[in-house]
Figure 1: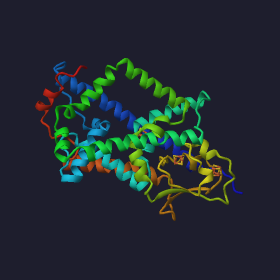
Figure 2: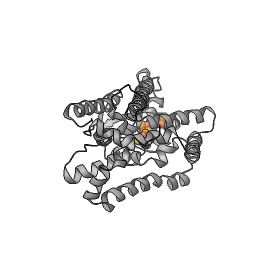
Figure 3: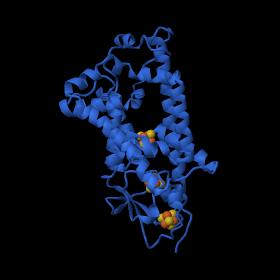
Figure 4: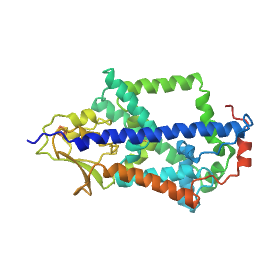
Length: 331
Ligand code: SF4
Ligand code: SF4
Ligand code: SF4
């Protein structure tokens, strides 16, 4: 049995942390920029700051409504187009490279992983027993089903368009920021509870509650990118499961294609046996590990640039009109 240290694989977690921290830092920057824009738009500041369209990444329900409109009428959203572009890009990445958006880009996933890491340091973080895991896992799919039912079945296309053009949807980005700037007691209790649960239960939010991740997981199931375990090389040390944020029983599977896999590659980096876990394309061709983040980030940034150039990123609502919708929102 060949057991070696694979230095190149050990650099992958560092690369992942770097990419995720860069995206998270950018999100903090755009949050600040959006706040400054709102101060100007609501008359609290004379300094004009451009509205950063990337904030629309945090409007998944609006993006789902825009997706319905796009699929049924071919009309691309004029309001929050970046939200739809980001949703479509995350879906494309999932179809090609597993839940790569979750594993390499999403800042909420990073927070979830940081809490998990804290839990590990405190020796609190656990994987739930199978029966409880199976009981809780459907929650995120039920959440997703609820939103799809409401937007794709309960509303006709006219109602969807009415929602998209409503003052509520136009100003929902500002409402969300205001919601987090002035959280109610209930909001604080819920956020604290989620944080505590995420410290105790590995990746609690992503694994059991996030409907966005549920959608990406369903698409990722059909992805040609998989992780393959060579049974004859495996020494059943279970280091892969210990490293896996999704608590997947990798050591028991031949091919990992479960919707729970984030494509984070932590299992491959943690495996002490050379070639025991491999990244595969179409279950045949071996992919170098570095290629996965390059493709994920490349697709994400590539679509972003194309969307900017082709007018699928910036809102079409004139800024003077936007101001009217923001006027009553407390900052
Ligand atoms: S499951 Fe949701 S919160 Fe977690 S990384 Fe994926 S999209 Fe982000
Ligand atoms: S880390 Fe997992 S796949 Fe690798 S040898 Fe150990 S049990 Fe087998
Ligand atoms: S199976 Fe591997 S790539 Fe998938 S989530 Fe677990 S550690 Fe990450």
